[in-house]
Amino acid sequence: MVKGAAESGFTLIEILVVLIVVGLLAALAVMNLGGGSQQRELENHVRETYLLMQSASEQAVLNNSELGLIFQEDSYRFVMLDEVADEWTEPAERMFRERSYPEWLVVTEFIESDTPRLASAEDNLRPDIVFFSSGETTPFEVEFTIGDNGDYMHVLASDGLSPLEWRRPGGEEEEE
Image (cartoon, rainbow, N blue to C red):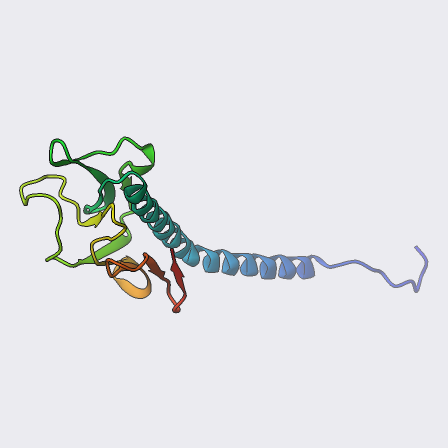
């Protein structure tokens, strides 16, 4: 080695400081992304429900039959009115199978109670929302939130005559 030549390179301390800073930034990024994952998952569940409700409404008109939607504790399912037997039955389409919500997702229904339901009170499959063959639906509003936190709420709603609307947090709306 020639005397007087400057040595180049990084010291062990400098490398460790850089690794610690990069590690902290990575941890911060993971924490920020982790908090939004439930919001993304909530939006995906609402989107799926919205699209299935649109499809049910269209199927009711196209097939000249009534389809219903039943909300349960942690799931929902569609039913179809069998006019011959005068009762609600499971639809044959796989698309309308029962679907579950994660336990952190809270669904709150506000459904107009004095509208016709096409079923007796004793019917086990009595739907909460009916998609009529005329294109109308039972007036409703369904709220989707993460736990009890109402700050990030999605709402699916219809007045019974207008198309289904999806109100997102921040005022964004999507209509049929």
